[in-house]
Image (cartoon, rainbow, N blue to C red):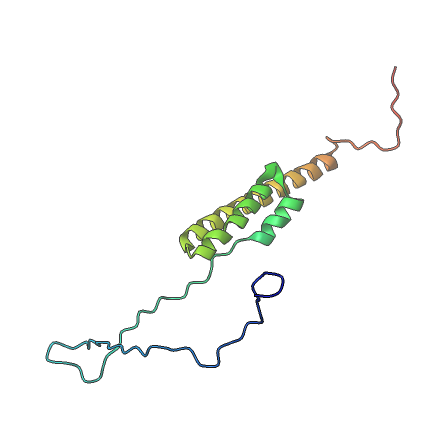
Length: 143
């Protein structure tokens, strides 16, 4: 104890001897595949290899473009939501779920693009034919 009545806590000193480890002895039995006529002396190993499948596309850039410039009836925004949702199943390894969200996003992006372009073309045609008149600089004269 120190003079203040509290126990003395000095610096931690590492032990100078190595920790004791118990040596474990494990024995493993290896089974050998054979053709049925006796044990196979070659020691055949079977490895299951899964085919590599590329991750499904998420169409995120296309969805952002449609959200910002071609957002007809909010289809671009809905496509953006589905594009973001592709990432969760992709991380978890659910390729079919990610593919489903990706194909929904692609369909919504195509629909938003076609409807927005049709609306723009219709507006230009109506403007060129004079159905929609743009009057500029003419003051309104009321009676």
